[in-house]
Image 1 (spheres, helix red, strand yellow):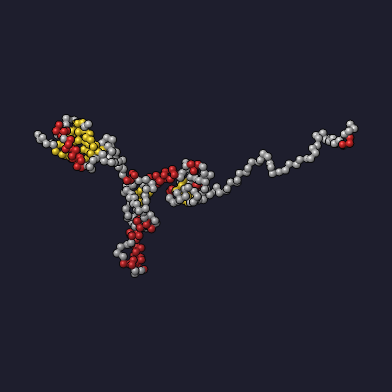
Image 2 (cartoon, one colour; image 1 turned 180 degrees about the vertical axis):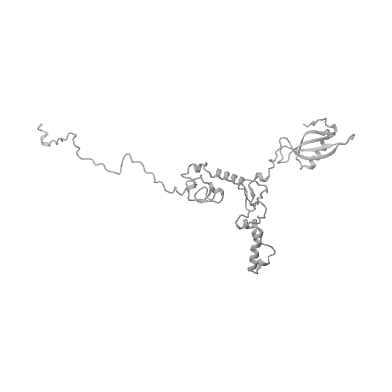
Length: 306
């Protein structure tokens, strides 16, 4: 049974009665047999009404076909405005969209996948800061580089003498590249702290494995030191039998594969038996009297002369 409701005003009577026109428009837009019963008619404004019909399309439980009809002022003919499929109050909806950067979880990156990093990622910072022009008295200044090239030109007549400008080896970027520091960005302090907290939670001293270990990783020979400031608290495990093999572990972590816990425990000795059946107890043929006197047996001939 359909009902007519309004949003602040009485809906137009002719538009409310145009259920057939609205159903025809919904059936034209929907698949055959998927338009159900008329649910309600809602007044949208002056001579504008939206009719709602049940949607029987599989996978669209709770959705409704919404067909809006209207008529011109002083006109008696109702015309079609639009038809669309809308979710109802109890419709089955997809979960709220979440950006990929928030959906990503550790381990989601597979072969061939690309993970772009934002330019303002808090975990990163520039590899070197400042302008690429050192002071005039610096050993890597352009003036010093020109002098070096001039000396090379006086000695050799090869390519250095024909260069139009000094090579870039006197720049900060060139020196950074020569020292292995030519990365455009490096880990920031925030990036280091978040990584340390993550590793501490996975392989730290508060884990159940570390609590039951005989000693910590700081004294283990399988701990591979790392470079940088993190070496004060972390290293890499190189024990193939350890659950942390190949992982960054805290120096306070530990496991049963500690290098100094190699002494195998002795097998437990069984308790002594209550009855030892492996030995023979000597038993005398003639037990002696406690007083020391033994009564000799009576001869047979004396038995009748008592």
